[in-house]
Structures are given as C-alpha cells and as structure tokens.
Length: 253
Image (cartoon, rainbow, N blue to C red):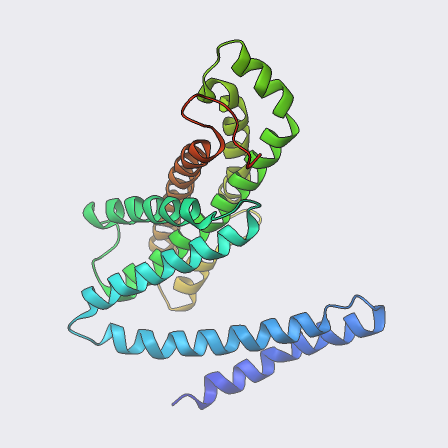
C-alpha cells in the first residue's frame, strides 16, 4: 500500500544527494546540516502522518484537534522566542501566535469558508500557526532592534512628556509592516511567479482549478490576517515589558 510512495520518496532524495555533493565540491559546508534536516523532516512528517491517520478516523477528532492546536501554539511560541533577544520571550510570542491564528481560523470555520472536518481544519491550522510564528519573530526582532538603536531619541521623547506608546509607535508600525512584506509579496505574485503549495496539492488531487484557486486565496487571506493580528498583539505585549508604568525604559533595553 505504501511501497509506491516510499519508492517515489527515495527517488526524490536524489535531489538532496545532489545538493550534498555540490556542497562538498564547492565547500559550502551545508551537507551535514542538510542531511540532518532531511532526516528530521522525514521522521517528523512520518510521525505526523500516523497521528493524522488516527485523528481523521476518530469520532473524538474535535478533542484531539484542540490538543494538536495547543501543541502547535506552544511549539510555535517556543521556536519564535528562541529568535528574539529577550528573556522569557515565550510569554509574548506564545499568546500572540495563539490569538492571531485562532481568531483567523475561527472566522474561517464560522463563515463556512472551510468545512468543519479534520482533513481541512488541522492542516489549515498548521499554516496559520506556522506563518503567525514567522511574522511574530520578524516583528519582535525588528522592533527590539529599532528601540535599542533609537534608545536616546525615545528617552528624549519620554522626558518631554510623551507616553510609551507615542515614543515607540513609529517603530511598531515599521516593524509590523516589514514583517508582513514577504506575505504581501507572495500574495501579489500568486499565479504569476509561483503556484502556492495548497493549490498545487489540490490540483494534483484532481480538484478543479477554479475551486483550488478559491481555497488558496482564502488561505492567504487567513495567513495575512493571523499574521497581522499576531504582530499587533506582540508589539503591544512587548511594550509592557520594555516600559515601566511610569513610562520609563526598563533594564531589558
């Protein structure tokens, strides 16, 4: 039953071997990292396929889906926090990602844009959490950098009577906009430069192109929504960590 897909996977691995050889001869030094990443990705996806096979056929899939969503939020928050140069950053990244992804996903289900079925909800939730994680990391990294680079200017504004929000508002806007640029660029080039993964998968499964296009656009709208909500909420939470109630910069800057 699974022999043919595994044979195809083995054939596709030739591409990984090609990159490893290229890395060796050109001394790029990514061969070990690529091998490790490929093996880890294989193990994780095989484990995921086993778990999803059970969830999709379970009568309790709603409960299992909630457990999966919590695990996604925690792991995404932890991963994002590792990229942010701030102590206990997970206390900011985890709730921001969870809220951003959950709100967008809930709206999609409530409006019946995506069917309330595990084979739809769980994979699309993974897209929402994954993209929210990336946008959260980009937002906080840029925002912290902007604030640290402009510390003197911010302190002058605070001394002149500006609130913490007024002092960093321009840096928050720039950080959020910068974090959303990759997603916006992908949306602008849909169907011209590349065919996105979800649409490609549906086309390969035999779905009509117009139906696949509608689902793909809906998914992109969800991604940009979850990312924007996550970025705005994360910038709000981090402001509370960087400023005292008296509108003074804390020692974390």
